[in-house]
Image 1 (spheres, rainbow, N blue to C red):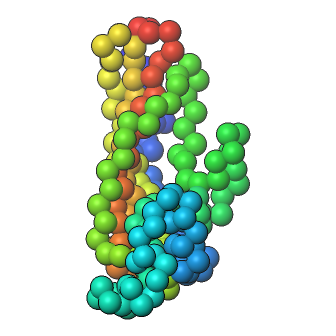
Image 2: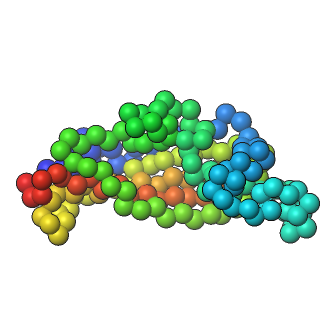
Image 3: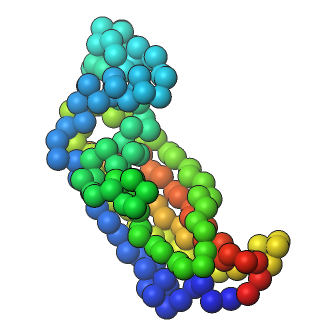
Length: 166
């Protein structure tokens, strides 16, 4: 083993905060819904949304989890312009171990979203093939301009040593 270095251990508790420069806007919700193929009229029809107890259109819930929509970060070498931890572990490949979302309140067009990401854990394991793995857990909370909790995202990244057992 050797992927869990002191530098990696020191990252546990590290946070990154991204606040959208403006309200999400109804158009962003409408375009995102179109892009993902979700034709729910709650995202496009004000009257329909009001008939269903909302003050107006709402946004697809996963839109706010796409921090790249508002983080304002430069694109990385693979063209991704959203939040990453920038963990580069030579001799490994990165695998996404999964995400778990909890949505607390519908996102409205006038919400200005802040995403707060935190590295919550870093552990070293060995997979069934005998390869060393580093498992990094993180959590994001999404709030609006009033501090209302909109959503949470728990994410797992796995770095697997290339070449099997060390």
